[in-house]
Image (cartoon, rainbow, N blue to C red; front, side, top):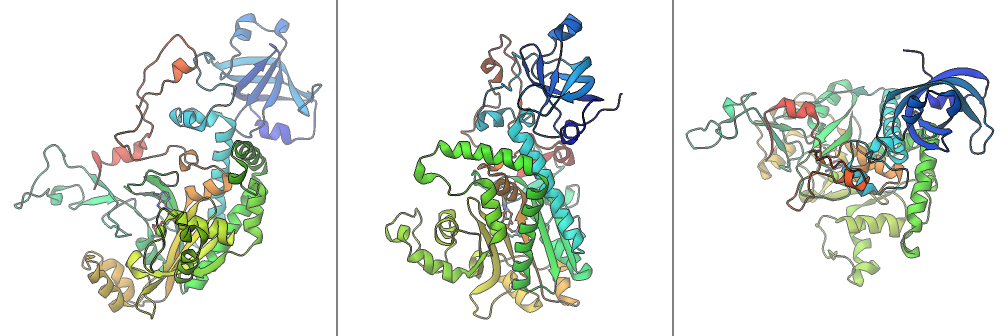
Length: 518
Ligand code: 4AD
Ligand code: MG
């Protein structure tokens, strides 16, 4: 294979009049002369100029939208408008043909909903190219931030027996034959016969194992896939999402909040500094989308402005109790505009309440602390008031909760008492409790939902558009699995193929014979 140069490099290079080989996919072919070639290294296309008279006619005919080609030629100053340089073709090879009529990706704008139906091809559009390069940059920045601070990247288990959040939203992993499972004397399924000799599930959080690491290594973070069989089919929930969970010994709640704020600002700054082209593209996309909305619903800031705003302003920090007071006295509450009216202390906040606080009242990110114990997880440090715990949630405009975290209860007796109250089996979590038995210390941590971060930075509005292969709950009303893309493209051939809207990552399917919801 000849050495190829990436288009990003060609476009960045100031020099001209040199020979290159580029490889990519034809985005458009205009006037039988100008190919817009994209290789995924940047959203910008390289203009490739071909001269029909000098080409083999059979090859020429095969230059179609979507085809993969290799071109060698001279980079010269462009004669036309819109680009600084272009590639004058000396030789062109078709690597892979594409029947442009049947190809579902059309040159005109196509809806995001339609793109979700052809998720296997959507990487080939400008919007999804920009999103997934941005997602990569943010993931890289996450690792760089913690590495620079001396944190250890700890890989916590994906198959586990623990329900870290105690919320029972797990996907069971088993090798038992579910058509004819072994049963114990009581007639229940006997998981002693299962692969691990017990019932196991996909992890909902790496936190508890992360705490074990922090209580020896000092500062650790996890960054991996997590799974929740939640019933909420919203624009902000996935059944499989990626979470970053730092855990720090000797941190109190304030240290925890400071770290979370610094971390979020760092990764946003990184994206602005390193992915400006993609962000500018997404900003333009968002501005066009906003124009379709009625004036009153349009956002006051553009995407770049919004990101700069987050960087330049301190997050507001208030307690849950203060938030309830603000909400109780708010106009929408008094005018009965909330679907869930805010009456008493103790109820969980709904997303309409979170959005009011962030988007209308403070108009910036808000950190809410000291929630009622009853609505938070068992491991959170209990406050002296006997009612609240040292929890913190970070709420973001347009997103709602982006981070959930807390200082942890380090006192063995208090933790065991709370577990007993909630019927959490103390014996099964002996390993977790050992951190409190042997050299316990104050410590804290938080979890940031990676897709919610990508959602915020990209300005997209649906979480399904910022993860390559969204896994969602399938409801009875879900659309058919067979997208009708081929008729849409106007092709005669109507191919029926069974493409899952939600391709389960093969690695997980192979882990077990059955992945079922428990
Ligand atoms: O608030 P959560 O449930 O907290 C935990 O799991 C803790 N163990 C974290 C910790 O302290 N180490 O989840 C943390 C974050 C949420 O704030 C949200 O951003 C994201 O994970 N998240 C989801 N993202 C997409 N889809 C879902 N179904 C999500 N559930 C939570
Ligand atoms: Mg939470």
